[in-house]
Image 1 (tube, one colour):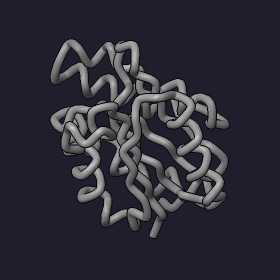
Image 2 (spheres, one colour):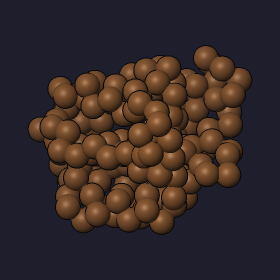
Image 3 (cartoon, rainbow, N blue to C red):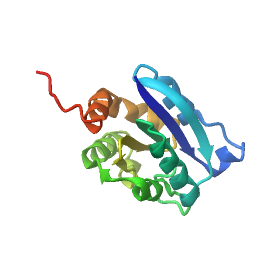
Length: 159
């Protein structure tokens, strides 16, 4: 079982002015993959977000799921925060999420989500919308266990 953390990027959520529905959905949906050991709601500040991501990477959290802050707004900083801590990008996963998002709305092409490896952690950026997270989580869920195994050096493939 993997250690999982969830980070919601939302000024209003951090101020208690908006419920974190997408973060709660992620928390409820990944239980079969591992244990959610932390779930934070932070303001859309790049430095604060990057510090939290790095702290989780340093703690050995296997999977970090983020929601919010992936658009074009002036306070959308999650991709930049993720890029600050990543060791390499997992481009195919980001492309798959945008491809699926585009099936549901033309606005999907505006997503700047980043999926990346940071040491032995996998970070996946989701949009902030509950509907979007519900549509996109099933795209990556089937490959997460394998991806995490590979990151941890378990590279033997089973036929």
